[in-house]
Length: 105
Image (cartoon, rainbow, N blue to C red; front, side):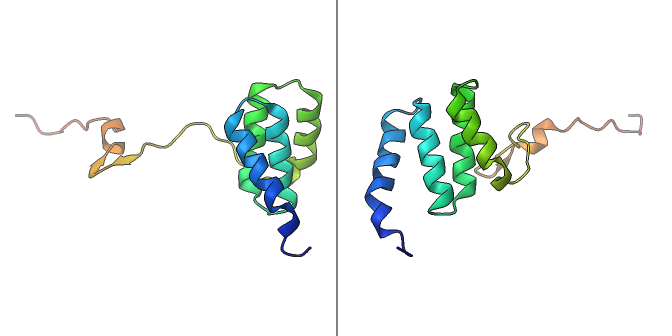
C-alpha cells in the first residue's frame, strides 16, 4: 500500500491514545515507530521518544527502540529555549547587559 491507507485508522488511534494517556510510554513508543516508518516524520518521532525516555528512562522497550531509531534523528541538543518575541516586544533585549557610557556627565 503505497499511500498507507490501511494504517490511517491505526494512526488515528495512536494519536488518540497519546492524547488520552500522555504518560503511557508504550503508546509513545508505538507512535514514534509509526511516525518514523510509515510517515517519515522523524522530527515528531524524536519528540515522542524523548518524552518516553523522560518518563521511563530505564524501561527496556524504550531503550531498545531509542537505540534503534536514534540514527534517524538529527544530531541536536536542546539546552534551552531561545527568548521569544511577544507581540511587538523583543524579550532578547531585556537579556542584554546595559552598556556603560564612556562619557562622564
